[in-house]
Image (cartoon, rainbow, N blue to C red; front, side, top):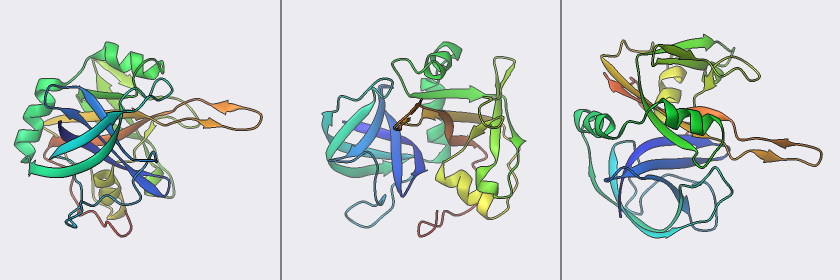
Length: 216
């Protein structure tokens, strides 16, 4: 199976990798025996990046809803890397609609969604810029996700690099956002439901900055 990587995110002490097959089916690539990657490297040593086209072997893993996209891999190799314009064309072809977003926000059946948005705005600023939160405008409506603070946290490595370097968000001619749900937390006295995040921003122009893979 071939998968276009659309998101590489920081997840606790490891990483999460998600994308779509060439036919547009969501896939969250899971290392065997775990839910996150301790490192995001190919065996040859290169890093997995957004825009990579992977050849993967494995099996679909049963997961508690809404995480229906988990695919446990036994082998993965990079076939090629798309240019930013090729990646935008893929997003243009496979972008989803507001109904898909509402299903994700309802924690029903899916935990990943790709939307073309009109604007991205920082609506909550933290002393640590990596904890700033974003709102997005699509279908003529701002989505701000009020939870502990307004906006969506963003965990994509390219966004984290931009924030760490203090670089401004570009003025996009075209921009897509990948949303994802956390796993949720089961504690002794309560259960915290899965929370929505922005896990990738793919735009023209692309986000600036070089990812520091030693300290992402």
